[in-house]
Amino acid sequence: MPSFADIIYHIAFISGCIAVFFAPFLLAFYIRNRAKFTKPLSFVQFIEAFFHSGEANLLIAAWVFAESLFWFVAPEFLLVFILFLPKKRSPKLILYDFLGILAGTIVGLLLPLSIEFVSSTPYVYPGMISAVAEWYQRYGVFSLLFQPNSGIPYKIFIAESIAFGIPFLNFLAAAMAIRMARYAAFFFTFQFIRRFTHKFISRHFVIYTIVVLIVFSISLLKVALIYQ
Image 1 (tube, rainbow, N blue to C red):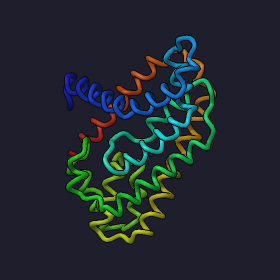
Image 2: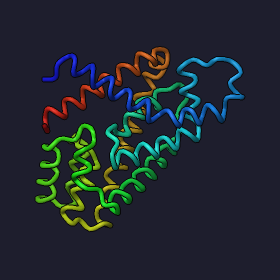
Image 3: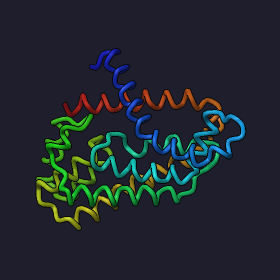
């Protein structure tokens, strides 16, 4: 079991990485809209304004694209923020996820993404690679069905599909269908939960953010214990 110090370290590391990923999009949004900010905004107001901007749409697409190649934070992490803000987001949000997954998958397959590179990225463990390899040996492209609930990063499935010679179009079609089904399921589930919780969460959004970071960090460590 990870020690308390390990948990604190991982929370700090993950939070810092997320902040770095967010930074250029937040900065671009602020620069483009600074003339409109005639009075100081609260944290929730600023984040809400950001997540209804073009920069946020680019962030979503970039996040999913990067998660297909090297990033270690699942796109559902963004949903737990976006969907619980006071102003409701349109299902068109799914479009930007689709574009990110499509671009990331194609780039990963064409590079091609290697097991060696994927193994060097954070929170990837030998047991994950072994599990995906075993699934591909047994089930071929249908191994992707295990990805949503396994906690194993999608980029490992891309890299191993190349190693096992899964046809490009077969993998692309299966990956897009499964990944988008997962994202849509999360989106509409969170939209439903939002009806009953968003007022409370919006009043305590900073605390909510901290709790989400802690829960996400612990979940990554829990997966690590399974696959290390």
